[in-house]
Length: 226
Image (cartoon, rainbow, N blue to C red; front, side, top):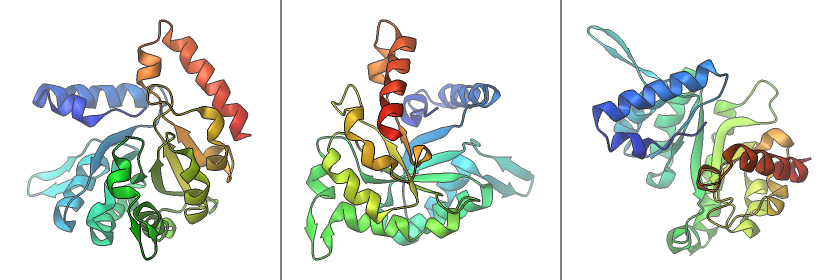
């Protein structure tokens, strides 16, 4: 489950309480929770964001638990020192991170596709993300909890980004309402079916039969991931 944090935060304290309840219900149902807040800041604040999403904060009155998500999305545009602080929180909690690399919105090209002497900005970010793979490596070693958000709306980037981040689990938004197609996502699953997570919300929630729409998407993704 991937709750969009902004939709809860806009409601103030009742919204955060509702978010906690939703996450608890998801865990009771055996689901993993990816807190989608796209956090990012200077290192000291980034560390606080990590504690809020997956960790805890020690106070004179005891430990205060954060949201307790299994993973959270981050904005790495402040650089490696900012990302390091959030990786440290994930590492301490046994959690994961999905860093924005090449997003699914139309405006992504304004910044993420700008050319540098080392290639497009999104490729430079991918290299930085990959440098943290060892820190959050899984037991098998083939995949890491240091993941990346790579949108489905510009699938021509997926194969290249997969080669730059061979151990990252790719979180792939943009399928459905934004125009991304499951049949274009094959390269994301190069490490196997555990190598990518396809996220779809509006196309399912707005369907006349959400369960049927979700099942259809699952079958389409299963076909290309094998």
